[in-house]
Amino acid sequence: MQFDVKTVNKLLGIEESYKAPEKMLQLMLDDQQRPGLFKQFLAVSTDLKFDWFHEYFEDEQAERKSKKQDFTPDSVATLLNRLTARQSNDNAYYEVAAGTGGILIKHWWNDLTHNSIFTYDPRSYWYQAEEMSDRAIPFLLFNMAIRGMNGVAIHCDSLSRRAKDVYFIRNDSNNYLAYSEVIKCPHHELFKREFDITEWVDRFDD
Image 1 (cartoon, rainbow, N blue to C red):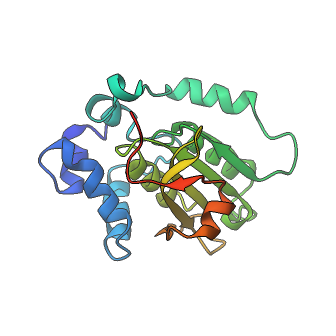
Image 2: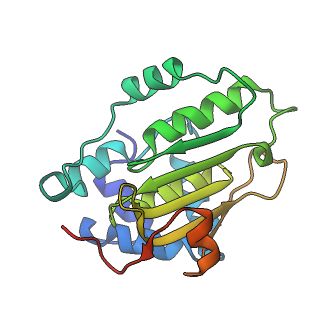
């Protein structure tokens, strides 16, 4: 495994894995440091068709007891995307309980390879991913932004629609190699209506 605990923690500049989510979120919201972090990870691997954090997160961060978290194997993510392959020109994707983005990444990869480097335009696709876990959200943001997606990651309970935050993921270019910006949206009534949020909260009920 290229992105083992030691490698990921070193890239994030931490010694203890419990610090990873907070540090990752900090880096994702920092316009100066985010591109540099992406370059460091890409120096280890440029294979973007799967979730690099699958095993790291499952071993170190998963909240199996409190949130019953388990993660979709890469082979299952591939199968699910084949079974739900696009039957029309609908370029929007929506996923609840997205975790760190394993299934989302497979869908993005299908979108990318369905085109060529001359015809794929990131601005033509929209990805909306929702996740409740404080620990998973920063890794989901990383996975969307390093791949140059456009969309939103919503930190919410998808059933009650109570939300902590909405993050706008923006790649305002036709460059499939470009990174996305990560913009934390204000807790405004506009975003509540747009994403069907019932209320802004600081924590979710257990």
